[in-house]
Structures are given as structure tokens and as C-alpha cells.
Amino acid sequence: MTMPIFKEDEILYKDVMTMDMVDLGYVAAIEYNDIIIISKGTKEEYKIPKSRIMRYNESEILLDILSSELDRYMV
Image 1 (cartoon, one colour):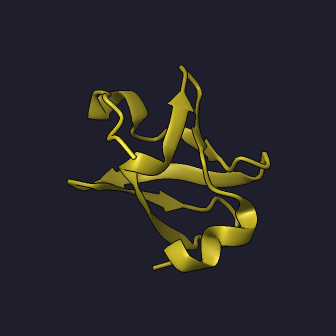
Image 2: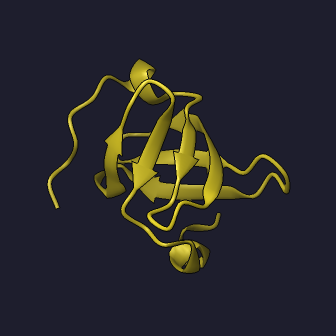
């Protein structure tokens, strides 16, 4: 996969959705190749490769990950 091109301040604190439209949480931090997402309710933390960002807009980020795949990204 190619690395998406974006400005980090454009995605920080945005809501994150999985491909099957599950509200995952928000982007809490950005690392070199990954974004750190914290879920809103349980405060679980996920480390997702930036390459898994399918698209984003002013309010949210859509990942090309299904909610059933999230366990492998849990920190």
C-alpha cells in the first residue's frame, strides 16, 4: 500500500471509523508510520499504520480495516 499524503494537523483529534462503519474513537497521537487511536468509551488504544487510512474529510477518518480485525492493532 502507498502511504497517504496528508498534513498531520489535519487528522489529529478526528473521529475514526472502520470500513464497516464502527466508530473506533479519535486520533490521539501521530507517529512516523502510525496513528494512535483511543476509543471514546473504554479508552482502549490502537496503533494503526497510516497506510490503512482510506480517506478523510473535515470531521472523520475512514480506515480500510474491519472492526473484526482490530484486535491485531490493540496496544
